[in-house]
Each structure stands twice: as structure tokens, then as C-alpha cells.
Image (cartoon, rainbow, N blue to C red):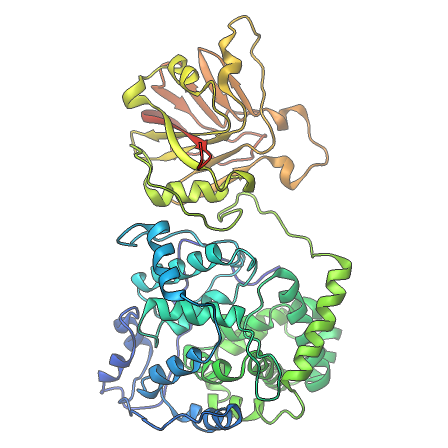
Length: 551
């Protein structure tokens, strides 16, 4: 069980932190980018005056590493050296050509000319984790979503990288251009450059297997460099569950000040910095509890990390982390390759299917503008992210609109007869928007002599877009065991009514004049009622068809 919860509609404010210094001087916030909520930042920080350090950066890896390690902890959060430092360091990472043009073009395609849409996060982010925003403004959080969405679209081979979100949030504090933040995270994921010793410098994992291998690497390092703590965890907890959360001690629990100082070194040296810091956090936590097992070990570690400023200053964390002997990049790489090979032989770990689903079922896609009276571009984008993957590259088009085609089911059936699958969307008098993905053609209803029956497939789902996006898949997706016929009552349609979802209630019921209807929990989709009152009055009904680009 994860200790964090995650809702794609928001990010957490982030841990409160304290920095020693003169709180009267506030011009130091000017070092941060325009995406930072400086008012919120000042409420949570005591910001000293920014001392700008213009020291020339060493060119050799070894010298730069020593330089950053020796000075990073001395720079307060507003030190003017950091924007230039981070910009120069990430510029050294190798990436593919024309990234700036590629990003701007894709952003325009996905989000339009103004790029103001705040898209749902793609599934390379972990839906069970709630990420801290680190004092970004709402505009800054929108930029984070844009960057991650474009990256997922341009790099479909990157399928799992939950740490990408907090790393992007932190980078956005000091890198002045949105496209530079994109270039930084893209190159951190795809970097193939070597150190002066010929070793690959790794930053971020890009698949579930590599992420799981990373957790196993940390477990091995904990056995070796935090032996007493590891033995304690093995005796008093689910040690594998604790080890699987180590990265969130850093990017989910540590105060912002500590994260920034860790990032100084991480951007230069890569993953081994995170391993070193994680090991020290484990050692120090174990020493703090003094052998007394807490009731919830995982929560105890996170609480200790959140309040770390009262236990140990950031400079001591870094100094002790870098004193660990023989925790080298080569060792980490060897362990990573070994665990990855083992996992590949065994196959990928099982993926849990949540219901209801609040996030996309596959990566982000670019859609052409659609003239809809009900949906905006962001809502259409969300619906397309929920479609089965084989339909994700199809284009949406409105094939029925009650405003133009009339308020009668007969008209809807005629317009949709040659189309499958379709998305039915209903807007109520109270501005609630919900509907269903229907996989079968509605020409089934044309023959009046046919007895009323349920039809459809397990790919169908119900959804609601207000107040936030929620998807209700067929119950058989999560539990294919003991299902009764009432769990497979997908759709029933004739000229008197349209019913989607049955079994102890109608998921959606619409009368023949598409005027009134109701929505209740049903066994087929195990949905909550899709509108607040259950009963609704239709303002508009639309049907979106799926069209291949070359049609």
C-alpha cells in the first residue's frame, strides 16, 4: 500500500521548510523564474539576500564534481549562481538534434497556438503518488504537465518515469525557458554520453522494469552500507515495500531546501547521488528511533524526512553521503544491469488496474481541433487518452449534435448507424458533462421486431468530466472471476429509450426525446451516479465518431 495518494488535477503544496538567514531581505526571490509562486515561497521560507557567485565552472568531470560537492551546501536557495550553473550542467548532456523546434511544434499541435490547456498527465507518471509542487504557481504546474505530455508523445519508448514530475518541478525554479526544462529532462532520460572513465551517467529510469531494478539496487546498497537499518527493517516490516519507496523519501518527503542541494550534485553526477543520499537517510532514521519499532515503519521514515531540518542540516547529509566508500557509479550500473536482466527473464511485474480510473490509459496524442458544442479541447484530449490504444491515433469528429440534428433517439440512431465505436456525451441543465464509450453500432436498433436485449463488449466504459475526469471501466476488467449476467449488461437501445449499463440500476437512461434521464450505480460498471442529483435534464447530446487520418 502506497503512503501517498495522487490526483492528477492538482499537486501538493510541498513540505514546509526553513532556511537560516535574514528574513527581512526579500529581493532574493528574484532569482526564481516566473513560474514560482513567490508569495507562497516567502511564507514558507526565510530568504537571505542573494549572493551571486560568478566562479568559472571547471570543465573536467572530476573537478566539477569536487567543486559542486564542496560549495553546494553553502549556496542558499536564492544564490544567483544556481540558474547559470544548472543551465550549463544540463547543456552538457547529449540529446537529439532540433529539440527546441521539435518541442515548440509538438506543443502547438497538442495544445494550440496559445498553449494554455492544462492536460492530464500521461501514464508514465505513477498515479498512486501525490507529487509536491515545490511552491510552483498554477501556471507553473500547467507548464510541468505540458512538458511531460510532450515528452511522452515524442518519446513513446519512455513508458514509466514517476520521478520525472518532481524533477521537472524543481528544474522549473531555476531554468528560465520552458523549452530548456524540456531539453533537460529529455536528455536526462535519453543521455548516452560517457564520463571520462567511459562510464554511462544515468539519471532517470524509463520503464517499469528499470524502475523496479533501481529499487532492487537500492536494497542491495542498503544491505551493504546501512546493514543495521536493513536488518531492523527485515525484522519489523515488509522490507521490500520499504525499499520500493526510497526515491520518495527524497522527492516526496524531504524539504525543498534539501531537494535543491541534492539536485546540485545529482545534475552533475547522476543516479549515484540519489543512492548515496537515500542510504544516509535510512542510516540516520534508524539511529533516531534508537531500536524502538514504530507502529508504521514506512510512515515513520517519511515523517522523519519531512522534519529532517530539526535533526540534521543539509550540509551534514551531503557530507556523510559523499563519505560512503566504494559506492561508485560502476557498482550501481553493474547491479542495475544484473537486476534488469533477472526481471526481463521473469517478465514484467503485474500492473494494477484501478477502478474508477482517473488517469489516461496510454500516452498523450495530438488531436485536430473539433467543433463541439459540449466539449473543449482538453476534455476531448482526456477522452481520447481513455480509448483503447488501437483507437488512439484516430481523429474525433462530431457525427450527431442535438442542436443540429434534433432531440430524438431515432435521429441519433440513424446518424450513428454506420459508425463504431462512438463516444456519447451528455450535457445537463446544471452544466454536468458525462457519457459513455460504445463499441457496437447502433444500427442494431433499426429492426423494430427485435426484442429488447443488452449488447456490447468489455471495452465499453462510462465517464464523467465534471467536476473532474473519472472513468468507470467494465467490472470484468479488474475481476474476471465470478461474474453474473447482470455484470455484462452493457447497452440496450430501442426507439423508446437508450440504456447504458445495467444491473440493479441504469448507468445512463435517456428517454426517446432526449429530454430527461437518470443515472444510477449499476453492476456492469460499478459507477457512482454521473451527475449530482441522479436525475437530469438534457441541454445537449453529442456523439463523437472515430476517423482514421487518411479517411
